[in-house]
Length: 249
Image 1 (cartoon, rainbow, N blue to C red):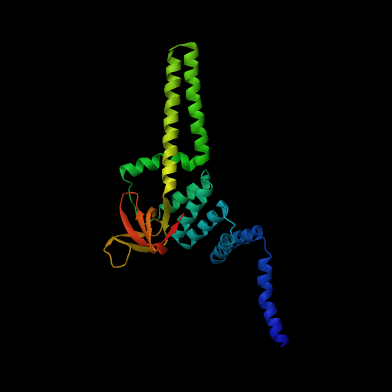
Image 2: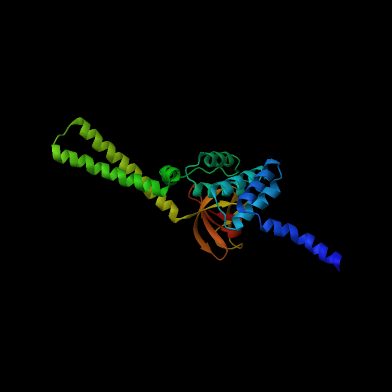
């Protein structure tokens, strides 16, 4: 009986020790596992932090690096996108995301409308919607200030004209970018996680296959129905895929 109790104790002690680890200790342990190239252990520890609710750009970023080392491009890009959502101005995240995108099988060019929307989404991605909102409001007050100066002094100087046009152009740029950011936020984004999947003409396996998507492809979710997502690609193509093959951002 003592041997049995001892065996149970030996099994429980590591679990109790793990339960006492702080999030910072788990994070450091995951980093150490990555440094010694024990990638499966690093993934397990980073995921344990996420499952406990400790989400941060650093956790997603490091986890993305591990998945990239393991050759899991879909999970890597998904993690980088999650990290970038939490820290839009982080250049390291942007650089790694762009590098990972080079390895995708699907090279899809954006349609003109999608391209311009993406172009105006650069500022929201860089500054965040809150920062962009403040700048847009500030530019509006600058326009009002310029107009007030004109009304007070009644001078149509060239400098005044340039200042008015410049402030108006900045306001339009910021306002359009803010609109693009808000519009993009209304739709859920996702990343294909499976090695490949067939996009169907409807939400079910019996529908016709339209095209094939591969891991790492980024898309938007237009509709959800009984375990299926209607995905929208940058070139305007749409198709239904099982919800399990993509990760929502």
